[in-house]
Amino acid sequence: EKILKKAETADYSKIDKEDLKDIYKIAGEAGFLSGNYEKSLGYYKKIDKDEKISARIIISSYKAKKYEDSVGEFEEYQNKYGFTGEYSRDVYIAAGNSLAELEKYEQAKTVYSKYLDYKKDIIVENNLLYVLLEMKQYKEVIVAIDNMEKSEENTYIKALAYIGSGNYEMAETVLKEIIESKSSFAEKSYEKLGEMYLKVEKYGDALFLVDGYLKNESIKRENIFKMLDIQGRTFLKLNKYESAIESYSEMSKLDKYADYSKFMMGEISYNFKNYD
Image 1: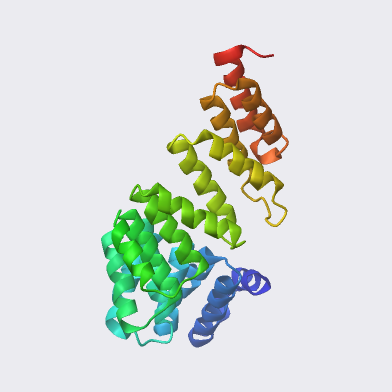
Image 2: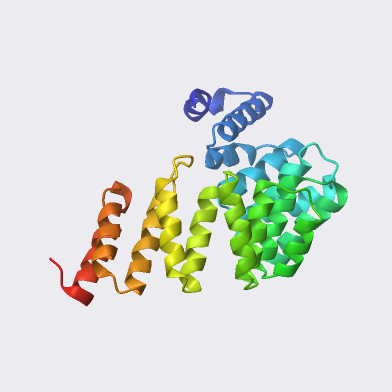
């Protein structure tokens, strides 16, 4: 940040052109490393591009949510450096992710697949799997994962593919396995399983799951808002309005979700039982 401030206040009229390039490089790198991607782009775009600068522009554009810019720069990088450049892996990930954000899933699939043809990489593999999910190619996802080394993330992705394909029995088995193994995807698995139970009208299972989540001391309970929401919606499906209000009352203790929970309590009171 200090470097960026100095760069912003410098009197460039008194600086030699070659020195100016060095200043822009240093300021651009400072912005990139500090996560100030907008500023890093401003400096990088003022200097001639070598491989590193091109890569930084592609990655910074993605991080700054300038997805079209990232993809545009990628075309030039790809033609010049292909897969063998020093920064190719990060560039292909940023470009593929940008295409996915733009919902250009077929193109994102191509970018990830081309890189994987060159070199195996677990992050690129998982990104490809998420794109295939968006394309509703669930069978392809399951087959691909069956041929991969098992990991916490691809096990979770497999559960998502089972849900997407309507194979709820297998999805339940995999999600329970994730929860019981205390995987880093346990929180997400609780939520997905709860939502699935609601969808297939397994209301007793949904309530039992939420109760287990709330009592589980081995997780951080980062999704407590979503789990209380699942609990509240389940009680509504069962016409247990007082219990639903209790769920949202508990949620109201979470400052971030106080407005939503109060809205839900108001809606339940007004539409069903007119509780005070």
